[in-house]
Length: 426
Image 1 (spheres, rainbow, N blue to C red):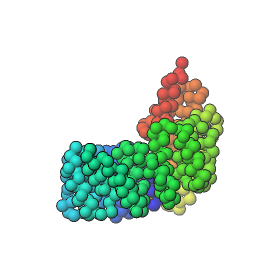
Image 2 (image 1 turned 60 degrees about the horizontal axis):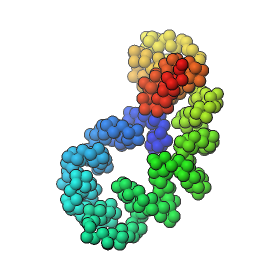
Image 3 (image 1 turned 30 degrees about the horizontal axis):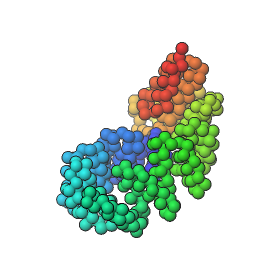
Image 4 (image 1 turned 60 degrees about the vertical axis):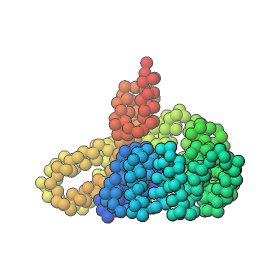
């Protein structure tokens, strides 16, 4: 549960480290852990890596229906029609997830331009699940013709009435309309949910509306909408985070920083994602020294100091020959070092002829600090890069930023800093 919380909060380094340790300690849960990794890569838009993790999850548990469903959905989403069709046909032959399998086969036929065959599959899906709103929605779309256009308003209203009879039905119908880019109908349905739905539905509908506003770059309107929404749900962190994003896009940096400070008070004050976001906003707001202070706060205590202290507290008595490769490291350590001593200790550990119990204990300690070491290395390089740009030392800044880019190639802020260093250099 904690690893999934880290994933939801986008604390990537901590999620990866914990997920790996969970795999080592709970081998019977590997299929579930691979599913979490697939979700991790999906959030980053790394589709191929997502698929690899789904396949690994299936290899660990070949009969897990949720895994098989997600693989089929991935194939459909990537428009690999032949593979997707074969996948869902196999599920249908095994009489597994029949309603889902028939509906997906119908959607494949829709995308292939075969509406009559699509309708047949949607009818089969509806027969398996008579309450399927999605099957009814697609049957309505497949059966629209010029001859019955005059009846469309009545049919649409009947569909809405059926959706209202289902729990979260209107929200599902709104998502279906949005999925086929019927934005006006989708927004009308989202508004109806916000006016009469339960709180959870209202929040989901509102956040869909927010995302649509951001996609259309309607930052001012989205900001006003979120501010009103926050009055109704003052403690909802999803709304607060969406408002931080909107303020950032609108360059209202002071308000964004104020909201992040509020989140840090009620969550983890050392949350690396929120603190780095705050530091970046302060830098854009031309508050360089304050930004540097926020970066520095994430470097204390240094992971090298934490590891050193843990080793000093550890009552172990290894044989002298066991510790020979680590002897010089244990004899001295630069008290100013942040993460380099940890990295050296980690690499030298492989050479030390330790007894299995000692090696396992040391590896456990290093594993617990792995995410912290990587975070501090990234934070240090970004802090140095931004500071060197501010001081006009552009070539030195690029050295730090390029090293960071090697560690974190998806970091858009680093790309912008590198571009800025070239643009500002005389």
